[in-house]
Length: 552
Ligand code: ACM
Ligand code: ZN
Picture 1 (spheres, rainbow, N blue to C red):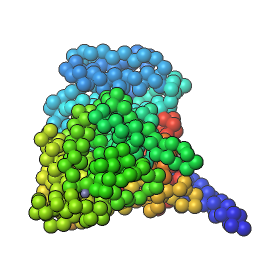
Picture 2: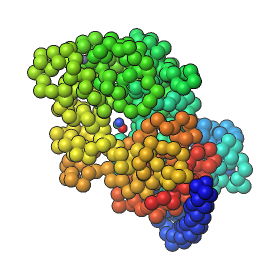
Picture 3: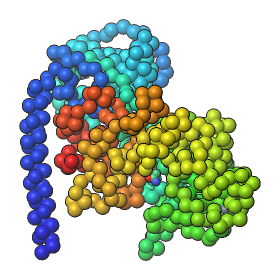
Picture 4: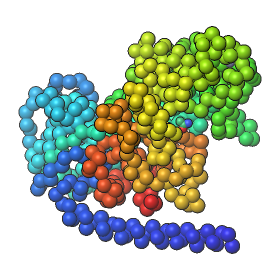
């Protein structure tokens, strides 16, 4: 009976989905027809700032090549990136010529133009007319974003190996786009500690970030259930901390070697993506304590846990060896990662062990601290000072504000808008990742028909409706909000396919929140473009959620 009831419910849901799909496709088609001159007919995500549609097409013929302004090595590298993408789908070599600025018919020209300063350092100008495609920007990064827009104007078969060979003609619409982002920090996070994902998938994830013009990958490399980065000075971090014993004696784990990390960093750099590593402290460190129990308050012993949640055993804040350990680890981390920011976690650190630990209590006394919250603040400040001495700055989850914010710290606000506002009013920069809009491990549809998730409910429309600037802030204060980020915690996500399912298209919607001017955002138009854009995701073999459009 229960099963039959469920089946009936599922059939109803499927029937409603099909009905809504058909109706909205019809409305979508009508709207595209109605708005044939405002750029909305192109399935570009995130929506560009200014689009002027012209008549006619540029045809990509067998003579087509890319010409790159010879003033910049980085631009040449970006030309190579584009040539490689086109080679993949066109099934032939695409020549790149480095020539001084001239207009050559039938070519795609990438050019730096310092006078494009109004577009900022990530903006670009894309012109397609019948004889030439021209992308200009002040900075190679802007050219890269122009390329992302251009790629979305190709037939969607561009995503497939040799896909474009099958097209009769490759036609690109004549138009002009001037574009630049709303926010400077546009991030996606991935937890590789709860479950581990191979290098090949991290690269696919970075490709998705690039497609949507994200510029930051927040890589959550350590947590209770696993340490995932090779540290030469502390080999037990990976020998012991990277593996856990699951049911039936199965060993689960893995880690990235420093060589693999360098390879991923190079891949990201070609896509203008900064990777911010996260090394969690003072809590969420059971994997470390399993390897080095002397860094805890009680001395252990511990094993790498298999259950999710928050553990009371954390680094001992009264033990100087903890700081020596963390500084040695961080020195290797900053040697590897060039990012200005290092994320040091700071969330969900229980104080139970510190309350009973003689060393922690002695630290509170000697440093004239009021309580354990101030001890946490002391901990974070020590690390922040160390990193600042090496020209880096910390980002921490919003709990780092409790007990006093370390100088120069950037706050990542996840469970408290009040903390975001308070940090801004203390003149600290803030990145918004609120659980109401940005937690892509939450359900995106009916839990009865969705794969098991951690809980919550964030349908696509909820992501799209997100406004990162808290309403309480005035325009001067709003400048401290650097941008926002989608988070993907992987307690209930074990495979790359499942990651894609949870992230796409929610990260497509967040990309538009972050890039597109507020006045140009429209849920209805986004849905129309997304429906078309699904064809590109199909050819890229992204396992996106097809039903995501239909939950409100
Ligand atoms: C968090 O979700 N614990 C930052
Ligand atoms: Zn202690």
